[in-house]
Image (cartoon, rainbow, N blue to C red; front, side):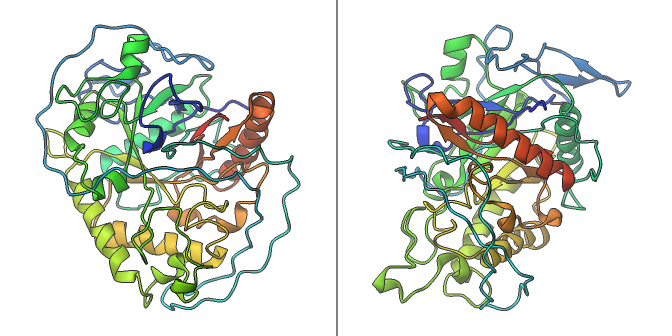
Length: 428
């Protein structure tokens, strides 16, 4: 099975294109960007929509795993900056990659604060998990896109948000169309914001990928916690958007109970009184209002992502990534499957139905799906648009694990009518 990908590396790696041990350059799902009406041909792997409504390849998309698009003259234009809400960069430390078996989640009542404990699910019959990933300085997000033809049995095309904007639907359609293509897109986290020799450049076209290859990536990834902490990268995002790039967000969210970092679980902390952060962001929980406040800040930011004609630019939101492992407060050690699904549903509904965010495609991205059970934490077809996965492994096992993960996720995504993708991946 073929698999195209979309992914964004978390703020973590910060961007240094060739210096990080585990890929700072990430394979993103190559998607023809026909979702933007007027697209300057500045990025590789683009597809243009002619006046007759037919798609045209304006630049040949790279085949296989090639990371290079055609070399073209650099566009030196600076876009006019736009004010962004507060948020700042988060530090990243990595934990051991321990295989876990999350429990299956029962049906839920999204209004009650306390929920029944999920039924333990049987462990996966997959190969041994990849060795622990250490030194993952700043790792995170992104998303992979379509894999092979998703038009098969059980496929139900459509965006989870019934009121999604026209551009958002076009983005989904473009990703879906790519699912049968023997091509791959290319992406990079913080490509024009954080590099080997720059940080927050005033020249919005700075790029380690461009410096290395003579071309820009198709997908530009950013982490939302950085924005909430004070980083102002909206002008950089909109520069990329105006070139027709795909924008992807991860969210290494702080612990909403303690405001500690994303690795602070607290469940076993004597000072936490046994409070579970994920459970406490649900209605009636101690961190519910804090979480909603953060979502309001994010929604305000998303609404500022506007093109010159006033249309809000679509993006991929890789929410609660690697949720079936134990290193994040939303992971399998710190939360039950049932609570995880309720938290995802609540977050989706608040952003979409309460805050009118209609330019998002939601990405469910567990870790190493062929080695660690993830199905029990799937939020439900009505709250997911893309099913992706993350995988890190040593060189000797990387290829085999990636094949197994792709097979697992493609089958799962197609059976649920979703676009399969690859999120973060790299060597340990």
